[in-house]
Amino acid sequence: MKNIVIIGGGFSGLATANHLARKINRKKVKITLIEPKEENIYEPEYLFWVFQDKPISNLLKPISKLLSKEVNWIKNIATKIDPEKNIVTIENGKNILYDFLILATGARMAQEKLDAYCQTDNVCEFYTKDGVEHLKEKLMEFDGGTIVITPTTVPYKCPPTPIEFAFLLDKYLRKRGIRHKSTIRFLYPLSRAFTMAEPAKKVEKLFAKRNIKFTPFFNFETIDNENNKVLSLEGEEIGYESLIIIPPHEGQDVIKDSGLGDREGWITTDRYTMKHNEHDNIYAIGDGTNLPVSKSGTVSHFSSNILVKNLISELKGKPPKAKYKGLTICFILTSFKKSMLLHFSYNYPPKKYGLNSTLLFGLFKKAFKFAYFKFLIKGRL
Amino acid sequence: MTDYEIAIEVDARGAFCPGPMMELIKAIRQAEVGEFIALLSSDEGTRVDVPAWVDKAKHELTALINEDGFDRYIVKKLH
Image (cartoon, rainbow over all chains, first blue to last red; front, side):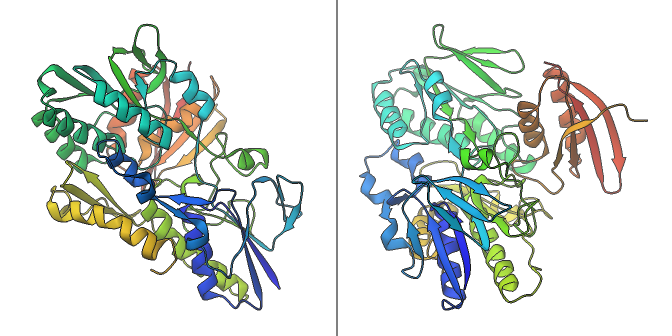
């Protein structure tokens, strides 16, 4: 009997566990998932939740309903991995042996840094449940002034999100009749408003049309809470009435403590095979990797399919030949209804068909939640 | 002649999002002052972006080496 152990029960871990459970011979292979949380949350919806009164129950599903019954679920935290002895240690001190390990540990919001930044209640974020609730309140109180939006680190989950937030904020303030006395400033690390040149041109055009002010080459350094200023690595200072940050992201402590990542704990992963760069029986998937691709659900989905193929080949004694080619599909919302669609890979930049913002792509974005819980997380596509 | 030791090498070939510049910024944040970073990029836009950002952020573009189908940027973290 071979043991496959998966650490992490976010989207990547659950989808991979479920997909494997469908494909492998259960008499010969045991699959174990280590995840302490009871629920999975549909994170892309946070963005809408800031502006709309939706109950949080819409975003949550119990893991017990999402995970295949064929998978052994250990509700605990992995604290250490010994890749030489093939052992995962969990918080209660128990050791779990593996033949193959899958790291689906995700990105960690660096709460200690976030707490240091958010010393005043006019500094907000929308990447956590509490953050969304707080921002929602602050926006309702907002009656004009300058709102500044900026990432605090790279990489962060879902690269278009701060742009989408700026577009939705513009619509929201117009609806409330206070846009004329509000300034929206968008600060971004690059010379353009998005990572890729062609979509960035479209975004900058819309920013100009909607009077969203863009500051290029602004790499967040810290916040001067006393004087309501945000400071950059490049030495600039920008004042605000309200500051909305994308929280600092890092790799998980278990990766750092086990020497399986780079200096920030991102798992060093082969971009094609999804294997760990140094350990042949360890795979990695999702937001916790150091792959040069977006930290997004579609990347996890497409690369999970490759990981599963390669692992099954190895279980059959064959070499892992499947290659993830960087396929990514993501959206950039430009309003509550319209979206662009970006379809690209390691080999080609975003296809032109998706670069115009349309209602159809907006509908796709909204329909994604249905596909997420119904098919994708269950490893059915 | 090379008189630098690379502390962090980032292979951003084929990376469109977050892309080579973001990978370089990530590496600069991870590096210690005085360390050298090697960035591998096949994106032509990087030839404009990297020198412009390195200049603005007051680091040092130590070398730009054209290799087969990609460029290797050597950047030194100065502060």
